[in-house]
Length: 165
Image (cartoon, rainbow, N blue to C red; front, side, top):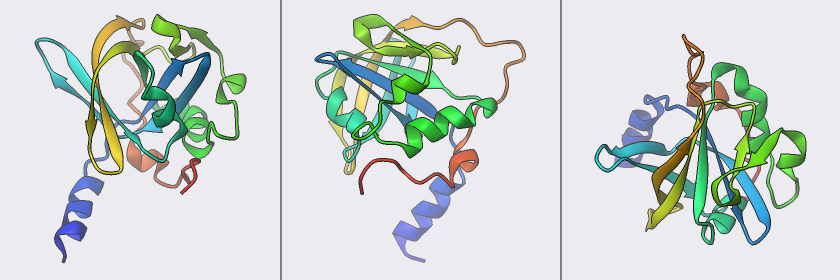
């Protein structure tokens, strides 16, 4: 097995939570499905999301000041399909969901209660993805108790990416 294949097997086993990340800049808005994201510091609190360089949201996020990160739950498959299977190059995804403008105009999807908006502190090159280091500023309401489990990569593995290849 090649090192690349071995690493793919490792990463496939992670079954990470899925997020929708939204951004606004220059009067435009964008959002996409993200699986590469994690808290990366406790003090100060920091979170990083990795956006594909082929993605419409990445192109807009480069000039944004804030990103909003929404945690998807098992019942949010339709939202994952919209933000992962459609591209903002062709479709206004926000015409199909309830949202409001949050910090810096970053769209907050009102049907998703677990979210935060962060100020972009840095951008980190990472191959075909760029990491956006976020300093959390505003958070959504706490999830229901007990909260439904997160939507995971295995739940959306079958989606075809909406952005151009």
